[in-house]
Length: 120
Image (cartoon, rainbow, N blue to C red):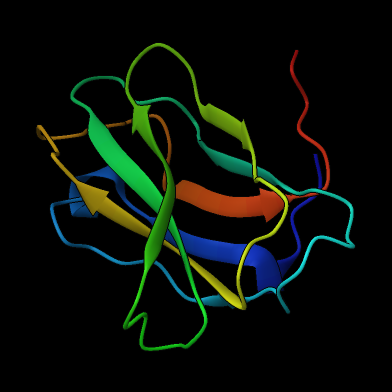
């Protein structure tokens, strides 16, 4: 899996993934005439969990945000999910419902869009 720096929502220590934390906004251009991207958030946590919501909107202020899906990052596996076609102009990721996420073995948890995801 290759990550493009322009497609990274955040790189944060697990302990910083608390309710209300927002990742960077990624300009997608809107429409569905692109190769669908994957959302990757990982590596998996050692303990705790955090719910991450992928949102899309027509403006950077996300005045009318639409949730595309919610994903739980926990100790089972990293999050790997296909981003649906037809997203609006912008994407962001928002953390909520966290229960003290920790990962002592990873310097940072990464949330990013990728063209492919290694499922090994």
